[in-house]
Length: 446
Ligand SMILES: Nc1ccc(Br)nc1
Image (cartoon, rainbow, N blue to C red; front, side):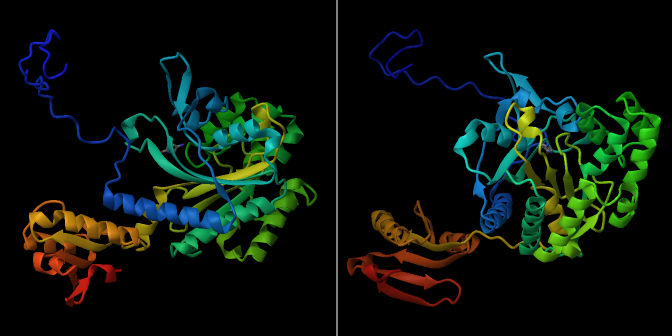
């Protein structure tokens, strides 16, 4: 409705006041349940963490990628009883399509690699930092979103790829001041389970489901694990053998059980030897109980844990050689990990490693009276074009207010634009850390 139209839309010539917006009930100013706002202080911490994710990815020669937060639901529908499936944030869109907020990034990566087909040369080393979602009954009051750093190597069948990925996470931890006394990696291989199960001719399509059940070992009672394995079609004898191999305490004990020729042992030995060459042996340990909860892992699996045992897994990953072919793509070997943005913050707090991150502005520019606002804008632009950050005072404010703001934004310099100086093409500069002040010609400012 334009100004000179009345409510019925006819033009009257007289100015009709705009309709007063109906008084809204006070909206809920909190973000939706399970989600977070990132106001400046929280955003500085998040940006600092992401900067370190990106720096490590750069050091390892990885390329950044991203995908839509919204994906076809079909990408995540796996019949392996995974928690990630039970908590899928899915809905039907206005085009009656089944879609979902991505719970993880790997299926999107697989989709794009297949989409690119022969146009990309292997190996691919891609990383992403993406928000992932789950819809969980708020009974447990857990978050419904988090940001995950993913690093994936596509097209390398050997465990050199897994060794490289673990090295990148060690590099990240070290950058944050976290040491191998604070965290470690539990490392195993699903080929351990595979070698046990192959003696019982368990159909291959059940393998993922069996792993998902075994991943719940420390979370639900053993009897329930056995019941679930039984109903998944695993025989009593196989269950006994499975649980036995899960409790093996060392690689040598595993070797006694499985022999030295199987892939599981050969690959794990290679991995531990490479860890020594990368220089992170003290960070990793064999732990047969690690299987991870995603159905598509097929080989080496690992997870980062805090040695005090106070926190949930910090990160996790592994090899998923069959994922692309389950999506109809070629059989391309792949491995990767996910690293969430929440547990790491709890760890930094635990270890007293939270960074001091304050807003830093180099200059605050203030006109000493209204007529000099234009001059102040000119000065701000000159400084900004020199790459200097400027907080420009935008309204007529008393000096007391300006000094207070300068302190709050941690400005290094206060640039005062006064009439008498400006007449001479000068400005007054005050170095806030030392109190030193001087007049300077505008073109001398840098
Ligand atoms: N997959 C997933 C997504 C979101 C959160 Br919070 N945790 C796990």
